[in-house]
Amino acid sequence: MNVENQKSLFINNDDLSWEVIDDKVKRKIMSHEPSLMVVKVAFKTGGVGPIHQHVHVQITHVESGVFEVEIDGQKKVLKAGDAFHIPSNILHGAVCIEEGVLIDVFSPMREDFIHN
Image (tube, rainbow, N blue to C red; front, side, top):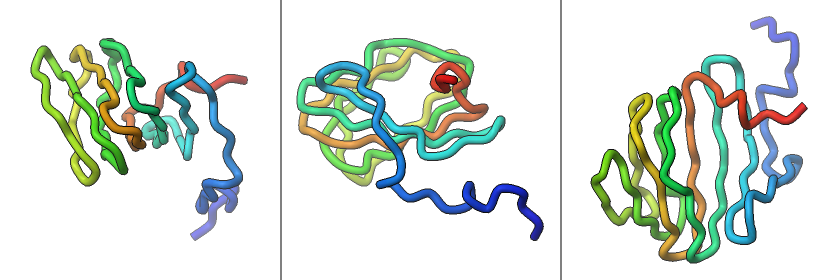
């Protein structure tokens, strides 16, 4: 296997910095390429991912905590180990009930998350 940038094959969490979204939400981009992106989002209790939509397909794993997730008008409480799937252009959001971390996977990558 010939890979130009070997660094991109292994991602050390401690080498990546958090981007503060607000006083209760921060995120870090773990890795990305044009067709795929993985983002870690840490929430304090009461943190909100406001209702929004985007063209990207999203699958999210609840790494820790408890969240009330809304997708297309349906709400469900999810806890560590659960996951949810958001098709393209569907309204969705989340409220953190108990401090935790979500692992978001997007296809294609969220270019709007990249700051040059």
